[in-house]
Structure formats: C-alpha cells, structure tokens
Amino acid sequence: MAKHKFILSGGGTGGHIYPAIAIANELESRFPDAEILFVGAKDKMEMQKVPQAGYKIEGLWIAGLQRKLTLQNAMFPFKLLSSLWKSRKIIKKFKPDVVIGTGGFASGPLLQMANSMNIPTVIQEQNSYPGITNKLLSKKANSICVAYDNLERFFPADKMILTGNPVRQDLLDIQEKRKEAIEYFNLDPSKKTLLVLGGSLGARRINQLIEKELTNLLSLKVQVIWQCGKFYLEDYKNQNRHNVQVTAFIERMDLVYAAADVIISRAGASSVSELCIVGKPVIFIPSPNVAEDHQTKNAEAIVNKKGAILLKESQLDEDFSLVFESLIKDQGKQDQLSENIKLLAKPKATEQIVDEIIKLVQSRKL
Image (cartoon, rainbow, N blue to C red; front, side, top):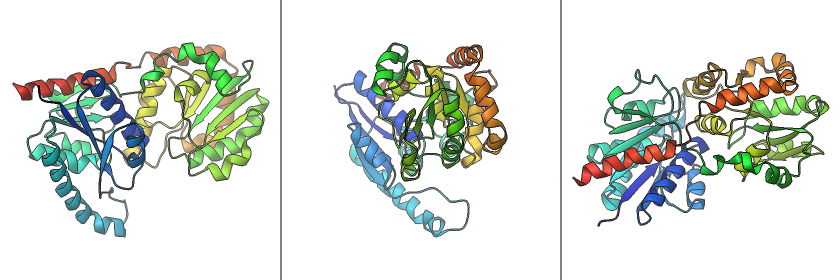
C-alpha cells in the first residue's frame, strides 16, 4: 500500500504551531510510516519549534500585511508571488494526500495552491472570530474544523465540524501530577500558587501589572510562577526572589498547570482550549493588539458560560487588585469557575480532526 503523505502549515505564534504539531503527532500514531512535511514562514518561530518536535519544515518568504504604509507592505505582492510559486513546487514534489492549515501567514499561499491543484485541504480554525486568510480559503476547503459555535456567518455551514482545538496530550491527566509538580517547581504546598502566562513571546501589559502588584500578591500568601516571555526576561529577571519564579519559557506546561491554583493568561485560542482542559480558575487579560480583537471574543465565549473572569487591559489599574483578592480568598468561587470551565473542554479534538483528514484520504483513494 502506498505511504500516506501530509503537509501541515501553521505558524507565526505558538497558537498556530502547537495545534499543527498535535495533529502531526496523531497522524503519525495512526500511520507510523506516513511522510509528514511542514511549511512555515522563513523567519518565524516554527522554523525552530517544528524541527525540535522531530518534523521537517520548508520556509516560505511571506509576512502579513501591516496596518499602516510600510516597506513590508510594498514588498507583500512579491512575497506572495514567491510563496505561491514555492508552494506549488513543494506540492508537486511531495505529492501530499491532504494539506492541513492551522492559520498563520504561510498557510495562505500553501492552501491556495493546494486548492488550485485539486489536493484536498482541511482548515483548522482556532478562534471564535476567524482571520482573513481562513475566510478566503474556506470557500475551496473540503473541511473546516472549528472550536466555537456560531461561525456560519464566516464559513460554509456544510463544511464545518465542531471539534475544538488540538491540545497537548500530557494535559489530560494533570490531576495526578500535583505532588510531582510542587516538588519540580520547589513550591510551598501550604500556599496558593499563581501562574502568570503571557503567551510564547510574552505580554508587556501583563508583565507591568505583575511587577506593580507583586508586593500585594505576596502579602496574600501567594507564590508566583511568572512566564514573562523571551523579549522581557532581561527586564524582569531581577524580580526573582523567595516565592517568585520568573522565566522566559516553561518547558513542562503539564506540571506548571498541575501546580497552579489560579491562572492569569492571555486569551489566544490555544491557551483558552488548554485552560478548559486544565480546569483551574482563570483571569483572562486579552491582548487588544490582535486582528479583529479576537482574544476578547475568545475570552467572552468562556465568561458568558461563567467559566472565567475577564479583565480588559484598560481595567487593570482600577480593578485588578480587588478582583484578584476576592477570588484568592473565596474557595467556593474558585471551585465554581473550575467546574464551569471544565464543561467547555473538548479533549478529543485532535482525534476528531484526524478522523476528518482520514475521510478525505479515503475518498481520494476510491
């Protein structure tokens, strides 16, 4: 029997890369001899993260359109043509059965070219408000795997499947890892642990908030694990002290989630999906600097079901300390948030997405 071949594309941020890697891992577990190739944007983080996960990657010369007139924008048509041409070359040489896009700059030209060459395509849309690339690609895509209800106004209803977002499989059993987690991070089991997440690159406004509030947090008998992001480590590493651990990046996300009692996080789609599975009380502080303010919409989808607290950046100075203190002192409120967010989890998302991909492979072989 001929080997199965898959191309995956997604990148720019961890939110597009990790779902693509989760899908690749599931494909590999079902088809151990499958050939899997990633396509990313040349200077973005996928060029490091994908090889670290054990997969080959090809880079396209592509970037997004800026919102103001820049040299980058003047170059965009050339980058797009170059990426379409290279995508065609990659597809002709690799001959994939299916091409899967999880969002990000590179998935646009790749899926566009796959559609024009009649190769089946699957879009995995993480957000409750899709980006422009996926809206354009959806017209020709075979399947669109979504994580939120009510996306009919953006995508053809007959192609949509509600699967949820792929998450790391090691998050599914964190309840059993609490003791190991407390030892791993050298925490005091008698204190509450606050986990602060700013996303893979960090979040300036969250970092400023934690720096300002640190003395107050410690006075509430809280210990803090603070992921400040690689761009901000130099600014904040001097905040390391007893009961405060500052780090650019956390390798063992399963253990840090197991150790946490309360989490402060951005509301990127992958983070939101992970936090539903983790099931801890969350205060979302969405980034206002993303297309169509989709982080706020992601967070609102959880808050509307009473599964989390939402604070906008503009509210932080006035409301944060009161909101945090009332949450950390109220175990009943923590338990309620925890139960409600767990109800929104979709732990089988990756399997369902791969089921859809396999249907396309089978229909192609017929």
